[in-house]
Image 1: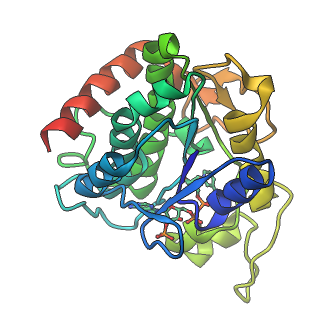
Image 2 (image 1 turned 90 degrees about the vertical axis):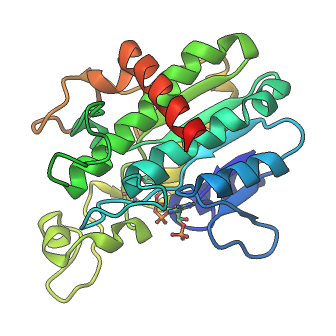
Length: 276
Ligand SMILES: NC(=O)c1ccc[n+]([C@@H]2O[C@H](COP(=O)([O-])OP(=O)(O)OC[C@H]3O[C@@H](n4cnc5c(N)ncnc54)[C@H](OP(=O)(O)O)[C@@H]3O)[C@@H](O)[C@H]2O)c1
C-alpha cells in the first residue's frame, strides 16, 4: 500500500493503523527519512520518477497529502495553482501512472482524502488555475477537494473491470500542520484557539487517529469489498448527497459525485498531466 503525506497528521496515523493490521505500507513524502520514499506531488517529474521506480502490484493508494488555503496564489514550477497541483493533479498523475500496478493486485483500492470543503465549490473547468478569476484561498482548496472526489468517481467508472475500487471521504476537523496558513482570528472563530493562542478541542474536532479511521476502513476493511464511487463522512458512514453551497454543512455535494463532471475532469487531467 502507498500513503501519500504519510509522515505527518492524518497520514501518519493511517500508516500506523495499517501497519498494525499487518499491511506493508510505503510512506511517500516530500522529505523522506529512513525507508520513506520521495514524492513531491506538485512536481510531475517527481511523480513520474516515483511511478517509474515502483515494481509489482499496489493493493491500495491512500491519496492523503495536501495543502490548504494558501493565502496568496502560489504556483508549481509548471504554472499550476499549487493547491490543485498538489491535492489533485499530482495524485491523478500518481494514480493513473500506477494503474497497471493497481490492476495487478486484482482487488486494489484507491482512497481519496477529500474534505467537507468540497461542499463549497464545484470544479471550475473554465479557469481551474485562477488565471482570470480573483484568487480565493478557500475556493481553491474547495475546488481541489471536489476534484479529489471526482477522481474517485472517474476511477470507479473506468476501472471496475480491473477489480479496482475507488472511494473518497472527509476526515472531519483535526488539528494538524494543515492549518499552518489559517490566521488566529479564524481559528478563534471556529472555537479552535483561545485568546492566548492555545489550541482548543471543540466538540466538532476529532483526533488524527479518528481522522485516519475512515481511510483505514476504505483501504483495508472487508466491509468495503466491491464498494466503489462513494463518499464517506468521518463517522464512517456514506454521506448524504446535498446541494453544495454556502449553507451546506454536512454531506457530499451533487457536483462532487456528478458522473459527467468526473468524466470531463478525467479527460482534462489526463491531457494536463501527459502534456506538461
Ligand atoms: N486536518 C483537517 O482538519 C482536515 C480536514 C479535512 C480534510 N483534510 C485532509 O486530510 C489530508 C491530510 O492532512 P492533515 O490534516 O493530516 O495535514 P498535514 O499533517 O499537513 O499532512 C499533509 C501532508 O501532505 C504533505 N504534502 C504537502 N504538500 C506536498 C507535496 N507537494 N508533495 C507531497 N506531499 C505533500 C505534507 O508533507 P510536508 O510535511 O512535507 O508538508 C504532509 O505530510 C489532506 O488531504 C487534507 O486536505 C484534513
